Image (tube, rainbow, N blue to C red; front, top):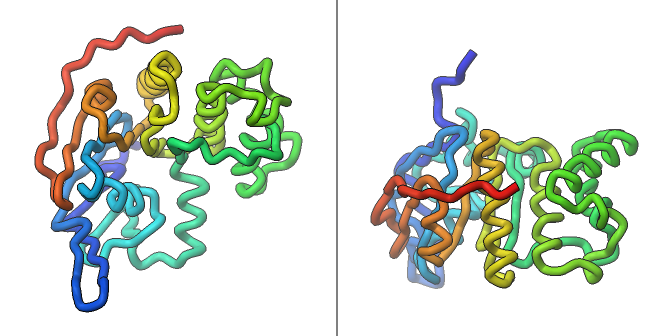
Amino acid sequence: MAQDFPLIKFEHVSKIYQTGEIAVRALDDVSFTIHRGEFVAIIGQSGSGKTTLLDILGCLNRPTEGEYQLNGQSIQTLSDHALTTIRNQQIGFIFQTFQLLPRKTALENVQLPLLYAGLSRVDQRERALELLTRVGLDNRTHHYTNQLSGGQQQRVAIARALANKPDIVLADEPTGNLDSQSGQDILTMFHQLHAQGQTIIMITHDQDIASQAQRRISVADGKIVSDDQVMTSHPLMV
C-alpha cells in the first residue's frame, strides 16, 4: 500500500550555534518536503546554511527548533544509536572527497556498510560485486584507491552509497574534485539512478550542476529563498 507521507518533511527547522554570548542561526525557520523518487539540488554559497542542512538531512545533527521527519519518523528525539542505524540503512552518502578507505580495495570499500548491516561475508561479496558491475567497475574490484582515477573513486563511492538500498542518496558536491568529463559521467549516473526510482539530494554551489536536477532549492543566510522545478533535458548515457 502506498505511503501517504513525504519521505522528508522539514517543519520550521532552525539550527542555532552558540558562540560565547552570540547566537548564530545557521538555519532559520526552514520548511519543505521531499517525496520519494525526486532528484533535488540544494544550492547555496559558502555560509548559506546548506552544509548545516546537509548535516540534519543526513541525521548527523539535530535541529535546535522545529521538526525533521524522515519516513514519517521524527528524528530529533532519537538516540545516537538509532541515528547511526538510520544513516547505515536509510541514507547513502557520497562526498566530494570520496571518503574511501585507502588500504582497502574497491570491493572491500563497498562491502563495509554491508558488514555493519550484518550481512554474511558471501552476501556482502555478491552485493558489492553486483554494485561495482552496475557502476562499470567490474574490472577494478581488487584495485586500491590509489590505483583508481578520481572518477573511478567516485563510482566506488556511489556503489558503496547504494549498498544497503537506501531511501535517499545524499551527495555533497559530488563532482567538486573531478574533471569536467568525469563530473558529467557521475551526473549521468545520477540521472540513471533517478530514472530507476532512486531519491537523490545533491548539495552544490554550482548553478550548472544544480540545473541537472529535477528540482532546485536555493538557500541563503539560513533561509530558503526559492524552490523551483527545473526544466531539463539530459539524455541518459548507457
